[in-house]
Image 1: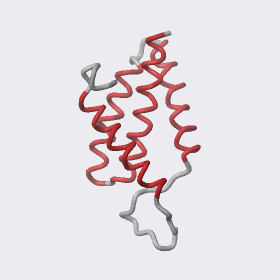
Image 2: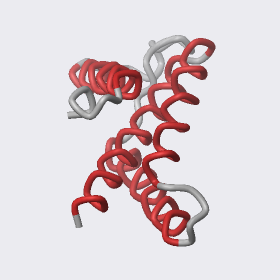
Image 3: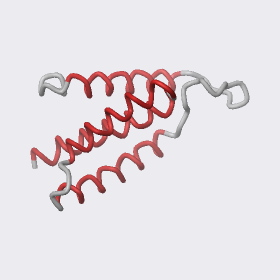
Image 4: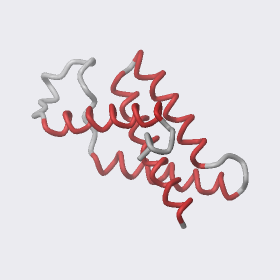
Length: 111
C-alpha cells in the first residue's frame, strides 16, 4: 500500500521491520543466551501500546497544525533507518512505531 502511494523508502523500512519482528517472534529466545547484538525481544503488546501513544500524540500535533501525522511517521521512519545502522534492535522498534503511525495517518485521512 505504501509502495502504491509512492512512499517507497518508508515502505521498505516497514517491510524490513515486519520481517525482523516476525523472525524474532518465531524464534525461541533464552535471555541468558542472547548477545547484545541479537534481535531485540519485546512484548508485542508493549510495542503496540507505545505505537498507540505515538499515534495519539501525532493526532494532537496534526490537529494543532504543528506537523501532519504522515510527515511525523516519515521522519520517524528515516530516524529508524539511521538508527538501525548503528543499533539494529533499536532501529527495529522505531520502525515498528513509524509503521503504526503510518497506519493511523492512513486511517485519519480516510475518516
